[in-house]
Amino acid sequence: MARTPKNTTFDYVIVGAGAAGCVLANRLSADPHTSVLLIEAGGGDAHPMHLVPKGFYFTLVNPRYAKTFATVAFPDGHVEQLPRGKVVGGSTTINGMVWNRGWANHYDGWEKAGNAGWNWARFLDAFKHIERHQLGGNEVRGGSGAVDVEIAGPPEEACDALIASFAENGIPFEQDMNASGGERVSYVASNTRKGTRMSAARAYLRPARRRRNLTVVTHTEAERLVLDGTRVTGVLCRTPRGRVTYAATREVLVCGGAFDSPLLLERSGIGNPDVLAAAGVPVRVTSPRVGENFKEHRGILLQYRLTGVKGYNAEAASAPRYLWTGFKYLFSRSGMVAHGGYAVSGIHKSDPASEFPDTQCFFTPISTSAVNPMTGRMVVDRFPGAKYVALPMYPTSQGSLHITGPSLDDAPRLEPNFLSTEEDRRMLVKVVRRAREIVATEPFTKFVVEELQPGPQITEDDEIIEYGINKGNAGAHGLGTCAMGPDADDVVDASLRVRGAQGLRVVDASVFRDQPSGNNNAPTMALAWIAADIILAERS
Image (cartoon, rainbow, N blue to C red):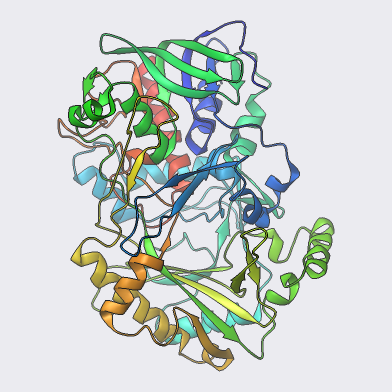
């Protein structure tokens, strides 16, 4: 149970112990004369399952470690639950650990859009400080940072066959998926260390917790920010023992992620006056874009029945087999359990006419075609199979996330608006057709018996689009709801300060204007590293 510290006043109060919060807590508390409080709504990350890369199949659906955000109903009537981490380490403790940084021209685009200093050179410097890469440091990766990065392995027959089929389609193999900005296919890079998860908490928070000037409180939910006029002076929190207010003499740093950060701002009276009025919250700071610009990948999962190749199904198709696979992992820290959700990743053009790579895909030689009625978890098939997720990399559809009332207990309204632009619909069709072309190429195609999902009956453009909207896959890469920009209605400026307020910054994926060429995991840690540089420079 959370215990209120004797001291409730700190120089910095950080809300959220996820990818960004852990990095900030480490770097700001490095000065012993600076007091830092880190607030986490969830509990600790001590359970050994958090160290097991494949353990996310269990923790991601466990309400003890994850919270879900329900969407509005889709056209076919179903509702999706988008999970985020609610545990020390945040989503880095329960995610698939893909270490995909994105590439130069898209980061440089943020600076060209008016965000001074937010460019590839700055991100690359942050990545090189953060990484301890299995392949060693060089001009494009780090070799002595706190976050270990390993490449999935050992090589596997179905994976190697798919990589060869990519090559036949003009997409070359790269050992390091982050060492090129062109088309490439690679075994996935993951933030793991000797086959165990390297979360932001393990890399940055754990080494810093021995510092006397860093305080970490768990099971503590930020209800709203405390304002004196338009200056933020602290955070009102709900704990199992009651409410407590933590004061910040310098700044409050909101690191709740793309879902919780805009909701906290709105509950505090920072947002669009119409949204706040409808929710019964008095306006303290007008910021019309809070909760808008929600962007998320929407792709399609293709599943295949294979033959003539073993894959991973044989290691996980029954409890005894999975236990034996886990037993071997305990001693070797290798095999299918030792890396995240997917083994291979490709980044390529949807067609030769594309200006730059615009498609991301993930592959693993495992398939699940049924659901256990007792647990709701997917059941691994007893025959060889594979999953291939195809995603357009740069969605243009914009959704929104807003409060519906003043309380933490009032369910927010999440409208993802997937595939709502003609560009996104056109891209999805191209991406799926390209995926099928690659799978139908030798040598991989000789192992394919049939496409189980979506299935050969889904062929026409409108069928692919309808399937993508109602049965597609969200990438778990939501961002943009407190987007950075140079205009008066952009939520944060280039120093990540919330416009119209003082003593308040947002530091997490919600400030990204758009997708950084793939996953949020690595870019969010780099964002926090850069934010710490900004804060420390202003303080000196």
